[in-house]
Every structure is written in structure tokens, then in C-alpha cells.
Length: 266
Length: 276
Ligand SMILES: Nc1ncnc2c1ncn2[C@@H]1O[C@H](COP(=O)(O)OP(=O)(O)OP(=O)(O)O)[C@@H](O)[C@H]1O
Ligand SMILES: [Mg+2]
Image (cartoon, rainbow over all chains, first blue to last red):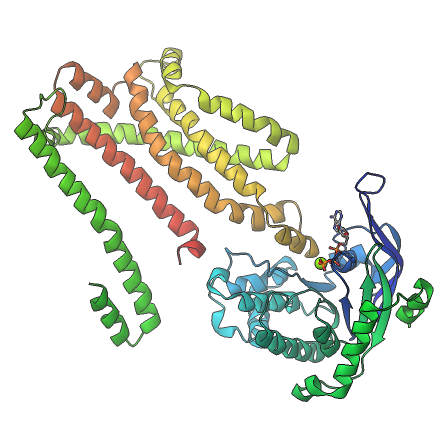
């Protein structure tokens, strides 16, 4: 099954005005069900824009986009995805538990089922003991984990994450990476993950999508095959080879758009 | 004092809760002690200055004289305080409700929002002095409505401005999240805008609570029904019974403090996530 399919997707902000920005052009990308795909590229290349298009938070200018085989809008209304932004974005007036419950509440899930699912998710991110706390009482990393639990609470078939670990220290970050991989494997979730960190992209992904700015486009797609991840993976030759490949793609000569499109489609 | 409480907390098996409670009561003592010391000291200095310096009572009566009058007139102060308090409360509730509803409307419709702020500012600039006599003439002399209307108008502005600011300050991440949940319109208002604006609403209400009492007292200086603290202050002063006038001022002061304290208490109750 295909989780996300973009073909010929383009996004122009403020079209026809003096401050017109071509944020994305000719983006072809397919994410298969259960796949973990990272987006990496310099600031302003349109990673967040791409994620917002998939999430149907902004309308696309050209091309077609389906999520779980449906138009993006229908997928959003059906809550086919969970999303986590760079900022945790918790509601400070709700307890941790009630924050995680919110997407379930909006889906009309019953009170008891809601609580059970939210508690299960908090358990998963190791914050079961903090259910009754308010977000302001948690550290930044804990808040981020609550946001991840919230995104996962509806058991979304698709997870969209925009630099969710951006503000974390290296140790917490690595631990959360492992937790995320475990959760995704457990629930069979497909993931699009935006990051600025090359090692993070390589460690987490089945495929790393390399993007380039002005206009924002996909320049390369690098397949990563490291098998099941473990602590040893971070020291393995394959891991470092992957890092080198991605770094080259980020620096290197931009591939012709049509070639990259074919890789992307494959 | 500090170390003693710390020791109790450390010895307590339910340490986290106990520490919390210890902090809170310690905070209360710490918060109350300085104003108490300053207040008592100030009264003593006041008393001494008046007694030693032989200050004329029409300039400044001694605290002991004011207290004597306060005690003598306590039942009248209570009665008139209730009347003024009722006016302030009704005006406060009405003005706050209108202020909150107007802010909700102004935040919902852009044009209304742009127009409403200058209108509200003009309303705020309206001198209550100019308004009270006019309103008093508009209604029966036995009516409490003029004073309550004055209070409402005074209360409206701080509540409206603060609430509007709160309603407008929506975290963009919250907006996108709610969009991703396909929630919009009233659900968004109910779950994000209103709770997010609550701390702002209470900031406005706290300011408004003291203003409400002041407005209710002062409105009586300009005629209308004379059953509140304001009328007693003017009549005592015109009878050169200055300590008695001051006793009623003290009554108004206490009433204002009660209003403020209740507003503060409600704020604590309504926004538990901020007081922890
Ligand atoms: N709402 C908007 N209105 C106008 N232009 C926008 C808007 N959002 C993004 N852009 C423009 O689109 C381009 C891509 O922005 P985007 O946020 O997708 O970049 P990004 O790859 O996520 O960057 P970063 O790594 O810094 O987060 C930028 O040039 C930006 O100025
Ligand atoms: Mg971004």
C-alpha cells in the first residue's frame, strides 16, 4: 500500500505579488506503507512546506497529492495522520494526560477508551508518572515526548514530524530516536521526518530525501539499508557510508530534476 | 523559620506534597509579613504625628479617632457597604460580561476588531464625573441603575482590552494542530481560544474589581439614591465630621480589598496550571 504519493507537486506562496516565493517545484515522492522517510536539506528548501502540504494545512499550487489513497483534504478530515511540530505545542491549560487525549476527544472516542489509550501512549514514551502534571512542570525534552505521544495517540497510519528532536541534547535525542523506531515498528506506522541532522536521518530512515533550495526541489533520494537498528548500528561502517553519501548529496552537484524524480518515484 | 519548615519537610515521609505545602504556607507568611509590619508601623507613625504635631482633624484625624468612629458606625458602614457592594458587583458582572462578549465578537470579525478599539478607548476616556449626574437625571431618584451603569462602563474597558488581547494571541502551532484535527469554528474557540485567553480575562477582572468599587462609591457623590458609602462620606465631610468620613473611606477600602481578593481567588481556581 502507498501511504503518501506526490507527483509534480509545486507550491508558490503569494503568487502574482511582489513577494512571490516558489517554495517547491516538481516534487515526486512516494512513501510506502510502514516506510520511514527523512527530509533533509538547507534551511528554506521547503521541508516544512512539503510536510504542511501532505498534512493539508496549506493548499498546493500544482500537481497531485494523495494520502492513504485519498485526496489530502479527505485524509485530514479522516485524521489519517498524526503530526508533531518542532515546538511541542502543548496546551498549557491541559494536563499531560488531557493533552494526549485531545485528538481522541475530537474524534469522539469515549472517555474511558480515551484515557486508556492516552495512558498507553504515555507509557510508551516513558512519561506515565507525569500524566497529572501540567506542561509547564516538564522539561523541554519531556514536553517533546508528550507531543510525540499525542501524535501517536490516534494510532495514525502516517506520522508527520517536523524536526521534533531539534531542541534536544544529544543523549536524549538518541534515546528518543530509538523509542520512535520502536514505536513505529510496533504500530506499523509510515513516517515522514524532517531533520537537519545527517546522522539522525541515516539512523532512522529507510530512505533519505535530499532537498535543495531556490526553488525547493528534491535533488536526491538515498536508500539506507542497515537492518534492525541497535547501539552497534551507530558505530557500523554502513552507517558511516550512509552519512557520507547523504553529505555528498547535500554538498554535491545537483542531479538533473528528471533523474531525481525517477529515483524518488522508485 | 525557613530552616524549621525545611526540617519538617525533610522528615515527612510524603515529602513532595509536604514540601509543596510548606512552600505555599511559607510563601503566605512571607507575603503577608512585610505589608503587616509596614502597615502597623505606618499607623503608629501616623498616630504619633497627629498627636505630637497637633494636626487639625479636618486635615488628618488620628487613626485612633477614625477607628472609634468606625466602631460606632459599624452597623451603618455594614449596611451602606452592602448597598455599594451590590452596586459594584452587579455593575462588575454586567460590564465584564459585555466586555468579554464584545471581545469575542471583535476577535471573530476583523473589521469589528479594528473599529472597536478606538471606540472602546473613547468610552474609557469618558469621565465618570460627567456621566453620573446625567444618568442620575435619566432615572428615578430611587433607582440603583445609574450607579450600576457607571460601574459597568468603567469595568468594560480593562476587561474588553485584556480579553481581546488574549483571544488574539493564539499560538500558530496550536492553530495548525487544531487544523490537523479537522477542528474549526466553535470547537477551536472552545478548546483553544477561550482557555488561552483566560489568564488575560482574569488580569482584566482583577483591575476591574477595584475600579468597580471606586466607581460605585464615587458615582454617589453626584446625587441619585443615597444609600451607599459614597453618600455617607460626602454627608459626614459636609458636617465637618472628618473622622467619621474617614471611617467610611476605610469601609470603602475594605470593600475594594474584598473584591480584589475574590477576583484573585477565582483566578487561582480557574487557572490551576499557572499557580503550581
Ligand atoms: N506562509 C508562507 N508565506 C510565504 N512564504 C512562505 C511561507 N511559508 C514558507 N514560505 C517560504 O517557503 C520557503 C520554504 O520554507 P520552509 O519553511 O518550507 O523551509 P524549511 O525547509 O522548512 O526550512 P527550515 O529548515 O529553516 O525549517 C521559504 O523561502 C519561505 O520563505
Ligand atoms: Mg522548517
